[in-house]
Amino acid sequence: MPSPLHVAFCARDTGIWRIDRISAVKGAALPAAERLDICEGSALSLPPGAVWTLRGVTSNARYTRRAELDSLTAVQEPLGRPQSRCAALIPIRKTETWWALAQDERRAIFEEQSHHIDIGLHYLPEIARRLHHARDLGEPFDFLTWFEYAPEHSAAFERMVDSLRQTPEWDFVDREVDIRLSR
Amino acid sequence: MPSPLHVAFCARDTGIWRIDRISAVKGAALPAAERLDICEGSALSLPPGAVWTLRGVTSNARYTRRAELDSLTAVQEPLGRPQSRCAALIPIRKTETWWALAQDERRAIFEEQSHHIDIGLHYLPEIARRLHHARDLGEPFDFLTWFEYAPEHSAAFERMVDSLRQTPEWDFVDREVDIRLSR
Image (cartoon, rainbow over all chains, first blue to last red; front, side, top):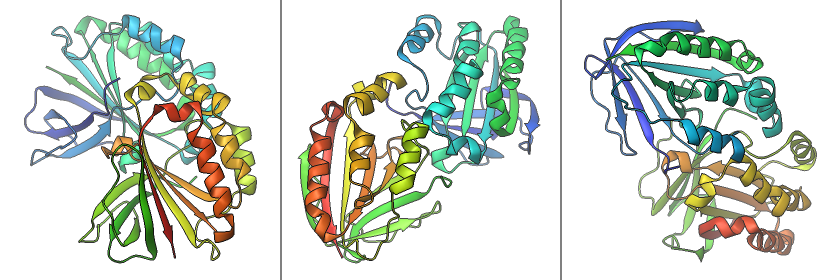
């Protein structure tokens, strides 16, 4: 795990990813934009003219146990694979009730009840992902998850997202936007 | 647990807390300064003329289980008690090895081996504390802990700090500064 990486997702008129659609799953959507520019680095100088910008930071694992981390590491593949011409950015916010829970309570909902890690593992290595934490940065969302996959795995991606949205964990999601992209 | 509160500790020539001493426990110290100003709020406009500023954010519990959280909540007292005329600000940074550990490995070192929560609980309500997370903000320290206590509990505070520094958890601390203050 490298040091925290600060990432800004900037919706504007340039960027390698074309925004195909923005859907409000729960709560307010985000304004339409043409393209998404992804800026990485701790001294972020944000490009001008963004319609919206969402910031997050990669961080240490919060729920994942050693055996789970080893399973994930053994099969996951990095972002940036040439065949990954589809992407999704899914910002979510969780309720105050979620954040007031103790660590063991959140872990039990996250994995023992919702199988969040297990569901993600099932779709590796086809669906590559990177989680960004945003709550402690004072952002409007708590998490920004970025996914990349090849067009032939689009149906698998839909199944994965649907599975997660049916879990008890998702009862604690009070805002979710689903942004689909291609290049 | 309220929403994350952004806090900046600004060492400068004004502020209600007088800085009595700054000690390097491990790694580099921080420059001397007269007083400490504490600014709270997500839209922090930092005062000018600071010798140094450390920023952090209160956040959700990362290791604490429900039973432990209930024990802490039952006895802890807030910051700002009139008799709390002594304070300490202890910024620490942990190693990359620590941050690469899985959640269950960090929890085991933190509590089952080091009794971090249990040690803190033993000194409640005399020693009030607030933890601020800083690693994900790109700060030079990972945590800033602020303690407040009455002068008659100074010896107890020293015992608490000594106990924590002798734990296996502290083997993962690679920078620590100890700032003592009074008002």
